[in-house]
Image (tube, rainbow, N blue to C red; front, side, top):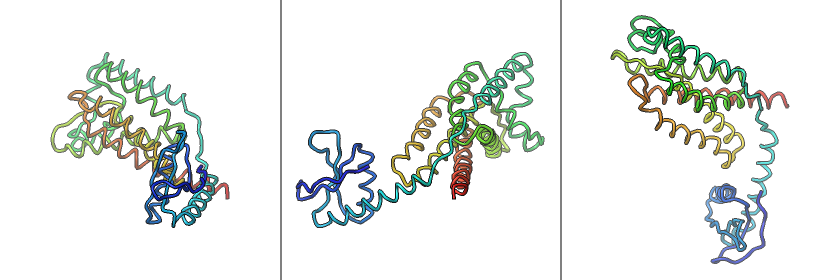
Length: 281
């Protein structure tokens, strides 16, 4: 919320609004720039509040535009009420149990790894289309498994909280599956294999980016872009950690999973918001 200030001279300009945070001041500065006018942001006397200054000749026009913008924002925020879902901890527990059980079976029956990992030749020449999916439950080491559970599980729960447990986990698995198929296709006809839940984990990050982008767009809010930037930053960190995790992992699969997750997140969240708005009308 901006507060109109009295016209106070500063470098030949007048104060047209004060804001509690710099991101909020930037948001309203974009309104001024959209009017094809110049503006300046200044930390006001006393500290803690940021003022937007414009040339005196445009003071009235900018104040009117701010009022219209705030009214539009209030209308949009009232209309767009993002749905809130349970975190689906039961689904997360089942996922962890599945990963741990499969890892124990890998230790007892080493042949399972070669039989069910993702493989470009086995998929496209042998017709073993289950491999891109089963590879999501295999891991090359205990550290690999622990990393996916401890870090990936957090993002998977956030996805369930954003779009719903059933839909969320379905999209996560679909992102991992599509990412593995795409990676195998890109490497074919060269011999290539990979395994690990991290493709699906990056799919979960992509879904969070997609939902954040949809919400920021629907609210027309600069501040809501944090919902996009935070998962993107997390994705960059995880790529640094896992991008070169050994011969049985591939950064391309992570990027592919992230890309598909972003698309699925935009589609799913856009549909949910549209349905919510339709039900309210």
